[in-house]
Amino acid sequence: MTVRPAVVSDAPAVASVHVQTWQAAYRGLVPDSLLDEISVEQRTSMWERSIPRGGVWVGLVDDAVAGFCAVGPSREPDAAFELYALYVLPSAWGTPLGYELARAALGAEQDVVLWVFDENPRARRFYERLGFRADGTVKTETIGGAELAEIRYRLTG
Image 1 (cartoon, rainbow, N blue to C red):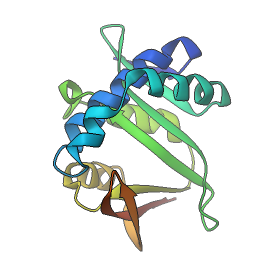
Image 2: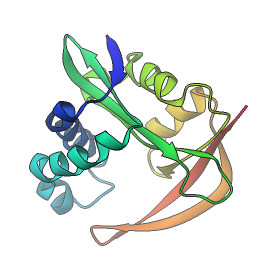
Image 3: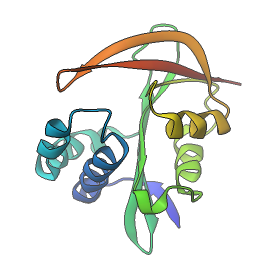
Image 4: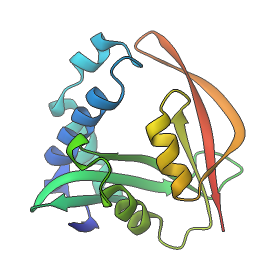
């Protein structure tokens, strides 16, 4: 297992992980029609634009991208840093890959927030093991016509 900063040539692999993990993790939560329509091509172009800005890390297993993490300045006015996304392929669930990605991407950051679906207990347990705690802030996001509650988690040093 190797964790390193992403480079633009990783964009197709990051996009593939993004699509596969959404389809596996959110089936039954996000409408199936939306999950069936997301495409690696669209996500590739998004990641080709995002990776050069920095803050994207990839995790490799057997020299293939099996996960990624994206971090940067918080979009929330009361936090310094944000974990935007952390996804690993289902084949890597339960392995140290997600932890290693988070550790590399977050570094020594002391005030970090993230948003997680309320009805995603696997992700919530993962973030809690990393030391994140729900801070009481909740919002509703509409995805594919479904209203989903999101809970904000915070890590403080």
